Image 1 (cartoon, helix red, strand yellow):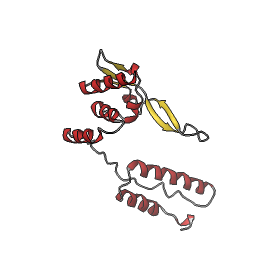
Image 2 (cartoon, rainbow, N blue to C red):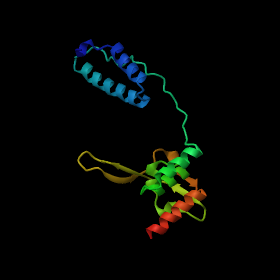
Image 3 (spheres, rainbow, N blue to C red):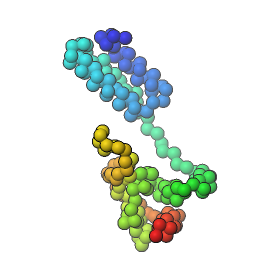
Image 4 (cartoon, helix red, strand yellow):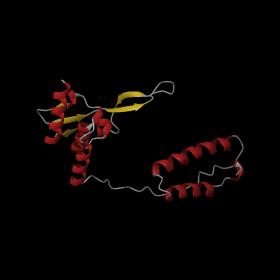
Length: 169
């Protein structure tokens, strides 16, 4: 299809078909933004008269209820993972409900055994910071402001942390 032939209905049909295939709202929104910028350049350079993305209507954003593992599913998961090297990380993650990057970003100074609390204040990422460097691990702030939080330490979590601390000394 030639650039001048692209109409709003073509972009709308693309968005709708990807939505029906199960693509997330975020992915569809990103696609629309990229196409809108691309067509904006085409309009600016005189290849098109109007941007076909201007009239595209995004599908309604579906908000999913979070699903949590049942007690039986948690037990099955832990039983199956007992032989893995990262078993303690799995236990920690299940018992405190933090994101994996938040658990891996914890330092001993974040753990208060007396108050039985865990302060989530950083997350561990594995990525490039700039295009010309290699992928590596680095700490960054949590995903949202609300993610910087103090959570109560359950007895199961405390047992895991004490076991890990004892084995790392």
